[in-house]
Amino acid sequence: MDALVPAFNPATVSGLMCRNTLSVSWDGRLYDCDFNQMLDLPIMGDDGAPMQVRDLDTEVLHLRRVVTARHCFGCTAGAGSS
Image 1 (cartoon, one colour):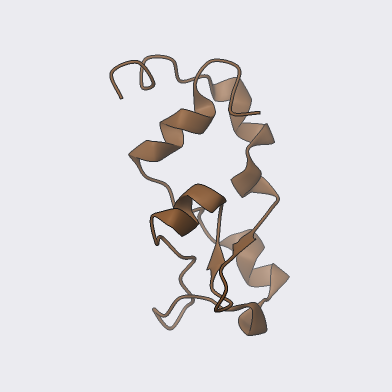
Image 2: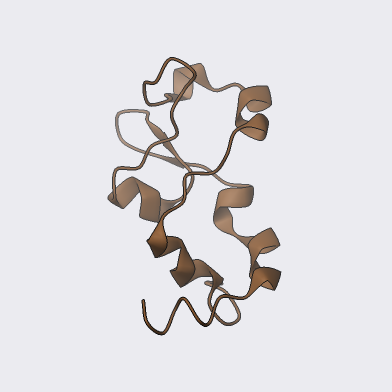
């Protein structure tokens, strides 16, 4: 984290996976990215429960905030994760 946080590059944000792709677990839970899936940080619905594929509503997904945490600095450092 000591290297990633100072290397944050705001120019990488528009190309991040979490901006246009979802990760889906075996049980249908939705995640903003594969890192969030591995950390069990699902997209939460309005009812406070993890969203499922069956609940997929693009309007709701476009209006929500992406689930972020400190691990996100890994995708925004330097030239980005891609």
